[in-house]
Amino acid sequence: MSRVSVIALIVGAAILAAQVRATEFDAADAARLSAWRARVEQGRRDYESFAARARSRLARARRAESPAAARSTGYMSDETLRDGDVIVTERGLVVFTGEPRPRHGEGDFKTLDQWRGGLGYDRRLLEIERANASAAP
Image (cartoon, rainbow, N blue to C red; front, side, top):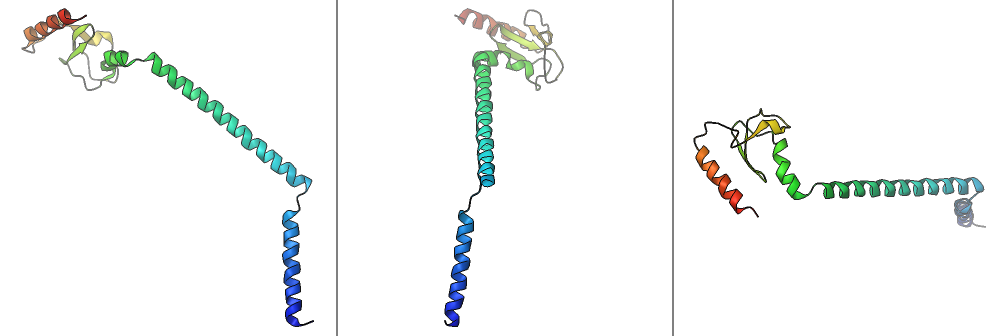
């Protein structure tokens, strides 16, 4: 046998041994694979459950706060309001009399009848409010 044949035989045997080792799959390997698959499947179920709960909470929140409700109360959390600012609400015009802060209460706003400010256009505001009230459905 030539030297090349011996080397080829040794290399071929090594390749065959590697292929045999790669295809050997014992019971411990099967158990580890099964456990891994179970963890992956449990993770998938946990995520699906979490996602379903999140979608449900989001849908409930969207139904609870209609666009009209958000528009009519959005000014209660407007930190840019300053004393004398006029806001148009569904109930009519109100004037901000509170302090600039992240949240406001009903006491921070006065109706035009309650408010006696000195903006110089009080009469016009009253005219606007009357016109608005007569145009309401």
